[in-house]
Length: 222
Image 1 (tube, helix red, strand yellow):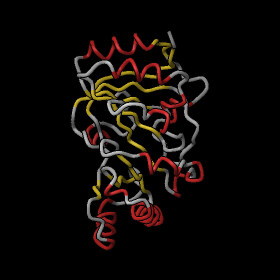
Image 2: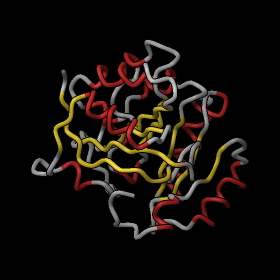
Image 3: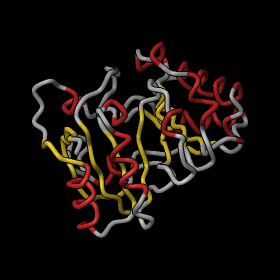
Image 4: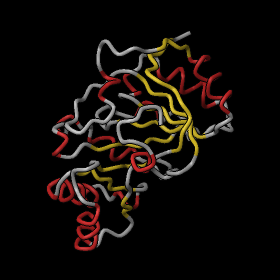
């Protein structure tokens, strides 16, 4: 069996994406290859971060015990976990589960496209304010399907302009759901709505991070 570094696991609601507000079981893996300026889970990326070593069967057992059908694999960056495809294939066999992978957009998702039943991806494209845009794997844009999601976390008008450019360049509206989300406390949602109106961004959804309004923005396990 393979083993995985799990920084935390918990049941909460999805704070964003197409299933925002729905219950989900979260598996947060340790480690990330990026260092975004606004990262809100940086604690999970430190070398000395405590983690639980779990096999793919351990993870599946935990998920099934919760009775929750939406599953979010997050991080950190889940695709950095060695043998992650073994876990994905095991989860695929459980037809009642709806599995989503939150990925930072820097790693190709192509090799995980072996089955139509495989998990959906929520790809968080890193815009200029993140200081990580140069790390993005642009080839992923052509791999997105209707069941996937692309999210642009924006902190400034510069970020908004870049997001609009990418949405048009890759025809993202006709490829998958597209969301604009503000860096919490850094840009007013009102300004983002004004930008959407100015650019006539039909088909794009503004989404606030629901969990940061329900709980303290620094609270873990929610």
